[in-house]
Structure formats: C-alpha cells, structure tokens
Amino acid sequence: MENSEASTQPRQIDLLLARYEESHRHPMNEKIHWICVPVIVWTVFALIWVVHPILAGVSAILALTYYFSLSLAFAFGMSLMMSAMLLVTIAIPDPWLLPVAVAVFVLAWIGQFIGHKIEGKKPSFFDDLRYLLIGPLFVLRFLYRRLKIAY
Image (tube, rainbow, N blue to C red; front, side, top):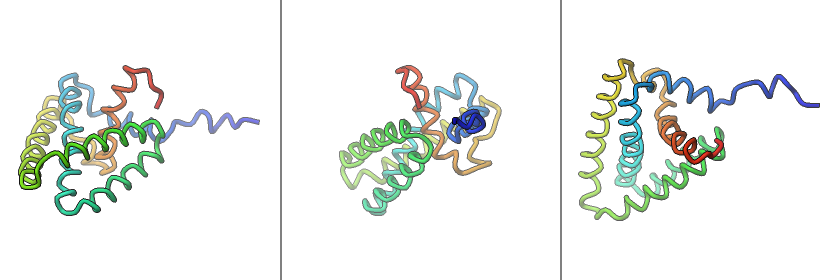
C-alpha cells in the first residue's frame, strides 16, 4: 500500500531550489549567475587546491556527498562539473594558479553582487549558508530542463 502522504511531500531539493529561486528571478541576474556561479565553484576548488590537493579532494567528496543526499542526477552532474574543474586546475601552472583563482574569484563575486543589485534582493546564502552549495544546482537545473533530464 502506497503512502499517499509521503508521495505528496516536496523533496528537499525542490524546496531548496524554490527558495533559492525567490532571489534569482530577474533575467539579467539569472544570466550573471549562469556564468559566475560555476566560475566561483572552480575558484573555491582551486584555492583549496593551492592549500593542498588532498584537501581539495576531500572538500569535493563532502560536497558530492551532500549532493547525493539531495538528488542522484544532480550529484552526477556535479561530479562531471568537478571533474572538468579539476582538469582546468591542473592545466594552470602552479605559480599562476593562486593569482588567477583570486582574481577570477573577486571578479565573479563582483558580478554576483551586481546581479543581486539588479534583482533588488540579497543573496540567499545571507540567510542560510547551504545556498552556497545550492547555487550550482540552480544553474545545472537550467541545463537539465533544456536537455529534458529529470532531477
């Protein structure tokens, strides 16, 4: 016998994305996020890599564990994204990685705050730090919807 109450409850990922979307409705803010969010994820990974590659790997595994708890499809997409980011990170010569990552991090965050100024709403992570991990899923959801991939 199916539990109809459980089947009507929204999934945690749907609740998180809906809440995140509340401050990301303006088309220009969305476009800025499509660019800046993946870039920020890479810069954070690269900056942790600079501290120690093993720490970057552990951080990625922890993030992926959280994504797996929310959605297998999103976890798979983020695994692919993180693999690409690893390739970018190791392609940049060691002496250049820190300055490039810091510069790109600062520029991407400036873009994010410009987007939120246009939006007229503060970033979601000001209320809940989990939204720093939900931002990449918000961007990935657009790709999944275009490709008709269930998440």
